[in-house]
Image (cartoon, rainbow over all chains, first blue to last red; front, side, top):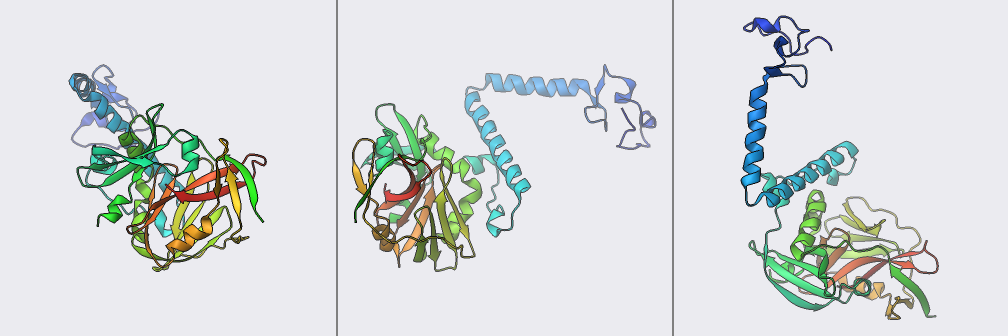
Length: 166
Length: 160
C-alpha cells in the first residue's frame, strides 16, 4: 500500500486522498495497478463477452492457435530486444500491418504433390524418406519431408522451386 | 587414403502432423531472420572456408554466410565481417557409414566448388538450412555425429 502514483484529478474530488484504494469502494471498482480505479462491472462484462464470443466461434481452436502464435512472436521479439547485440542483422527489419500478416505468412497449401525420395541419408535413416512440395495462394512453394509410416512431417521450408520458377 | 566413419544423425528431427504445420513452424522460428535471407538472395557465391564443422561463404555483396553445428539444429547467420575459420580441411576420401550400413562419400568439396560463381539463395527450416543455385538442385546442411566418438560432429551437406 502506498501513495497513488497517478496524482490528483482536480475534477474528481475522490482522487484527493491519494492513499485510498479503488475510491474507497472495492465492491464497485477495481484498481489492479494502484493508479486508476475502474468500474468492476466493465471488466466483468468485457471478459464475459469475449469468453462467450470465443466459445460460440466455430473457428475458436484456430483463433486460440493464432493467439498462441502471436504470443510466441511477442516472446521472440522481447527476447531479441533483451539480448541486444552489435550486429546490424539483430535489428528487426520486417514490419507487418497485423499479427496475422506476421505469423500467417504461410497460407494453406494447395496442390501438395509428391516430389520424390529424399536423397539425404540422415533424414532417410529417421524414416523421412519422401519429399513433398506444395504451393500456397500467393504462389510461394513450400517443401517438407514425410515419414510415410507415421504420417509425420519435418524440415518444412520455402522451396527452391521459387527460385527455379522466376 | 580412404577413411570410413560410422555416424548417426546429430539430432532428432522435429515432427509435425502436416506439411503446413512443418512450414509454419519454420516460418515462425525464422521470422526475425527473414531479412538475413533476403540480404544474400541472388548474390554470387565467391569462395568459402570450411573446417568440417563451420563454413564461411563469401558473397559478392561483401556479406558472409556462416553455417555451423548447433545443439539440435544448424546454426547460421549473415554478417558483414569475415570470421576466421580455424583448422580448414582439405578434401579427402571420407565415407560416412550410416546405421543401416549405407555409405556415402563426404562430398563437401565437389558440392561447394559447384556453387562458386553462381547466384545462390538460402531457405531455413526450423532445424536445417537449405541452399540452392538458380535452376539447380537443392542442397541441405545437416549434422552427423561420430558413433564412436560423440565429440566429433560433422557439418554434412548433401542433395535434399
